[in-house]
Length: 296
Image (cartoon, rainbow, N blue to C red; front, side, top):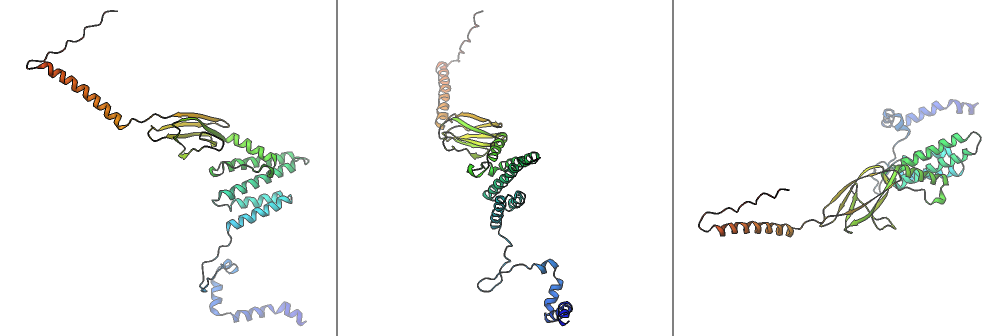
């Protein structure tokens, strides 16, 4: 009986004893604080001197992202595609402004959708569901490549990705990108700007060029010291490589303008001197006008 009373009836007495043993100021603070702040007080750290420091962050986004990817890979190995997708969607929110983390998240999420599509394809009545997952994989590829900092994303190495995914990337890339290449440029020291960024020579190429360019209009500026600048507006079409050649015109030097000016002044001066020489002290005789041309 005594044990039963202690388990069931002594709780109010214990609460009363605890309440009376807590200082009044602390009890007042607890009563005034919101419920969620009482349940989860902020973490406080102290430095070497014992002084309280700022509250510690709840989680580091980089560490949380790495943990989410590791968990998604475990689920993927177990064939739990649905839960892997949920984890990876959350991981995308943890990438912040880090292109490397965002690229890794996209690739793993797309890979999971392709695996799910492959798994459903050979099940009874599963072809429609398989195609829906393939469609979502293509949509995510377009979303990934549509980001300027991720447009050069490829499923590499190919051995780590299903063939269907590699095909989807190639197919999507052809539909949303074109390319631009310079065949010849004179002088060879010229600098080419594409939409304000320097156009560089890709490995294995001899002239500047760019792949994975967004469709539509772009501005090309060609500059070289001592030459006139050239501005060209180009239009990129899907799955097409646009080629251009540029030959810049030399600028006229200051000496050229000075020489031309001196020559003109010399001609004018000669005419004036001839007129003055013929005039002497008398009136100047005007040169006769040329006669009318012979009739045809």
